Image (cartoon, rainbow, N blue to C red; front, side, top):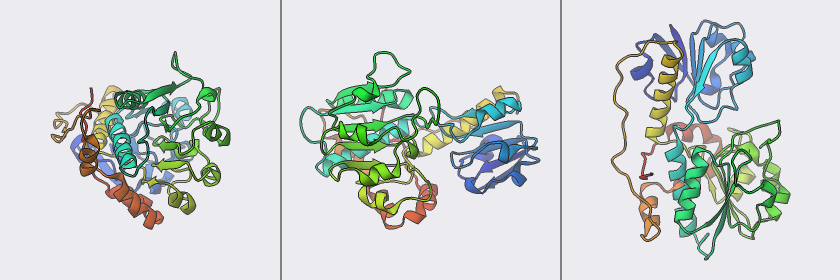
Length: 333
């Protein structure tokens, strides 16, 4: 059996070597010629998996070590009887940690220090629900917005917020598209100095919207509309610009590999083997409103450091992302 895999997926040999030959490549460089005689394709979000890539191949299973699936043409895969899976949920803890560290950096810089803070969480799935719980514990009044959840606020009713954080997939069409969801009208309904954190998909906010936004808004961006070709004006304008690493902890990436292995076994593509135990960080902290948690988090991961690197060298987006390493730091319920 032949496996083509993104070289940035960890522990491929530990989980898939017994299955067959693994050929690793940069995800952006995987092309049709690579997969024509492959049985399994393992990717991340940088690889577009569609007819152009897989037409005429013998691929039986596509696994993406990511939470999102907008880079997969799932309808085409289903039509051609190609099993597929993502690692949805593998990075929940990691993204919540990133949000917490971002809040710590913001407060250290004088943002979000006023009383009676009001936040909107757009998208209340696995990650959004955890982020909302974190914000409530920190004393925020939290508005939940998700058209697929009961008792949440309609998007157009989100007003007067001090913080907006987005946790939605990129959806181009249908009843609830998220492409360019955050627009000028939405920004104009928020408080002056509102902080926007985007860890979902860059294209939910147009580059031009960010460029033309009032200078009082504070942008914390981990994703961008045209990755890896970043708009330097936006990078410079943002308080934080990190290279799509919100979900990148060692544990999250390994968990993604495990989930793809388990999915391939469940689909009958490969035979189950005795696997190594999943590792968990021993360096976990618990955030409580009553303690001075910000310095503790920033000591373990300060997003301003990698942001400064990306601001200096935006063209190094892929390099910085590839070599970024951090362990889990929070104890979540």
